[in-house]
Amino acid sequence: MTLSSLESLRYTKTPSPKLEVLDQLLIPHSKEYIEIPDVEAAWSVIRKMQIRGAPLIALVACLGLAIDINCNEKTKGEMADLDGAKAKDFIQKKMDYLATSRPTAVNLFNALEEVNEILDKAEATPSAYCKAVIHHAEFMLERDISDNKSIGNKGADAILKKTGKETVRLVTICNTGSLATAGYGTALGVARALQERSALASIHALETRPYNQGSRLTAFEILEENMPNGTLICDSAAAALMKTKGVDAVVVGADRVCANGDTANKIGTYNLSIVAAAHNVPVYVASPFTTLDTSLESGDLIEIEERPASEIIESGKAPAKMPCWNPAFDVTPAKYISGIITEKGVIVPSENGTFDVPGFVEAHSSNKKAKIQ
Image (cartoon, rainbow, N blue to C red):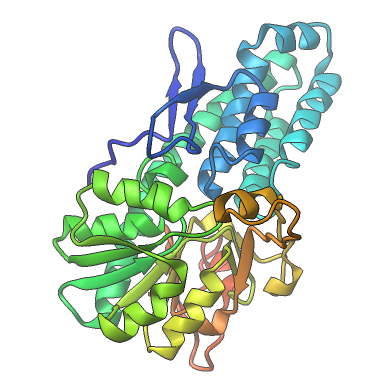
């Protein structure tokens, strides 16, 4: 299974660790990388959406923290005279700051919690803390690629089984490929896995207004990867596409999946799921296990980030003084979802149509069983 030639980030270990991220606001017209020397730079590229995608946000935050405390001379000087407890508090404040960058994607918070657990187990010295953070951040980078490959394979299996077809026509929204992860993709990774099996007949990407991640990024990836019959459509054209040309499955990413299966993803996903239901097209969510948030009973409890009005006004050429409402995400009710694809398996609805996400999570930390394909 091959990786994409696109690099969302560049991380090198020698001669000293260095992190650069692709400025996705400039895609598809140019490829420029931004160096991340500290947590302030990591926070900035996340907040400005120069990088985006729940898995990539988590990686950049943790790698940015690791670079900051291990390589940044200013930060190293500030930590030099701290004892173990104060050094840990110092690092914790940096993690708290990173957590304020974007509120909806649970991957960021789960990743920072992982780092917290690593710090708790480390020797209580500044040098031990710094080494523990960078070793775990590097492990997370390797794990992301492996997990995404597994998501791709399991998603391809599930969609081919559900449709009963040898080749399938997909629709996706936003960007969930190499540019949203460390190198393979989640929902677009499923499309890539199908392509590798010669089982992808076509893929339609919604433009994903107002930030146009579909038209700027997914369309770019589709062309770069030579996906068959790749086509860009307006967000409002999905229903017409399903009625006139036919679609076999919708596959989307996720920023947070609740205990009941309700899923937060890029704005417009909810609309797409309703349209798919009207045309009997199955909808699959593809996201890492870390996206599952069993602490929230339903999507009503998810904090939805609201973006500046300027994003709508500038991209839509609207009057400068026009009031706007610009939520970055919406919540797709579980009833519109056919399966939730993770690297550990696919969660499917029970006979009464409900998802047991807590059971799935528990099954992968014990020997108990959940409804898994």
